[in-house]
Amino acid sequence: MPEFSVLFASSAAQTAASTVSGLALGTLVYAETGSPLLAALSMFGPSLAQVVGATVLLSAADRLPPRAAMSGLAAVFAAGTAVLAVPGLPVGVALALLFGLGLASSLGGGVRYGLLTDILPREGYLLGRSVLNMSVGLLQIAGYATGALLVSVLSPRGTLLAAAVLYLLGAVVTRFGLARRPARADGRPSAAATWRGNRLLWSSAPRRYVYLALWVPNGLIVGCEALFVPYAPAHAGALFALAALGMLVGDLVVGRFVPDRWRERLAAPLRLLLAVPYLVFALEPGLPLAAAAIVLASAGFAASLLLQDRLVALTPPELRGHALGLHASGMMTMQGVGAAVAGAVAQQTSPATAMAVMAAASAVVTIVLAPGLRTPVGGLLTRSDPDM
Image 1 (tube, rainbow, N blue to C red):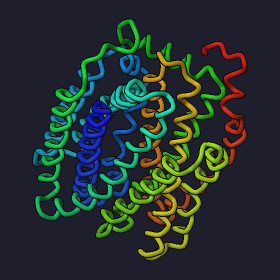
Image 2: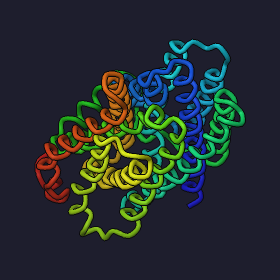
Image 3: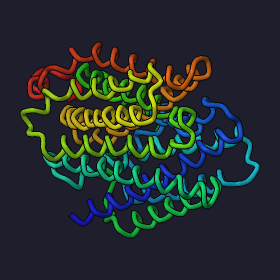
Image 4: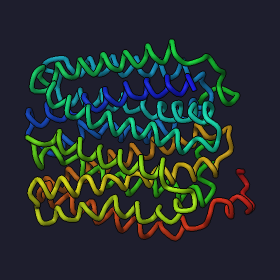
């Protein structure tokens, strides 16, 4: 499918740009401030803005032409990342700019993954999403390795400029590679329409459990990742790359090789796998054991594939862009919350202790949510649901 190839390429460019720029900015802020909290916020704090975007912007995910929306957002990211490279930019101004980019990002996920449901047949969504996720894993591995090299050769600011060029490349690929297609839903985007859509999506108890399972355990573990720079400053790029490798392996196995009949059974163990290996950080392990724990835990991110497939099955077509955008915004928001909480705990204790605390919290949340996710989707769809 030619359009899937274009979507894949534009997503790859954005992933590479965000990976390289995140590492560069986190390194720059930590070098200038020595603060684990500010370093974590500079890398993952923009995700906090997505909660605002989720309340006012998400109706646009189904009400804007996808090609125009995606290319325009990529151009905004290119410009914003270039500004972050300006010498002498105060940390407060940089964080404010990152908040604005986080707002724009809240819309991007809904547009991109809503378009994916248009390009692929319903039964192809999980495989298509797994391919996109695998590209994210590969590009994060390459991006963190390349980013670490660029930071040492070009400096963090030079690396930010390289990331801006990648964002611009993604805008060009999107504009000239995707077909022009109309918006998925009628009406004008508005905060009121966003609120109505959010209420409709949240009114279903099965979807609420899916959203919470997608957001909270994931966000708490990203809090662990946000501490890689203060935990091992000289090896942070390698640790991020190993986390991406684990995610890649998990997505590959679940998306390509696990039969449908096993997916429901593996969902809960995968969610626990995401957290349990990080508990080893309570012992302040050396780099080899820490690396092994990170790779193993990151394979658990594949649980999100199964949960997203469940969410699509529980959502009518005209709301899928909105539903997937709400998932992406909520997930990124919780990642920002996780980074902030982990950084605050690390300020009072140590990065290793904070990582163990976040992992324990993630495991507890997974166990609490498990009963609400056990009913097969087919059974849920046969019941009365006012918004279906």
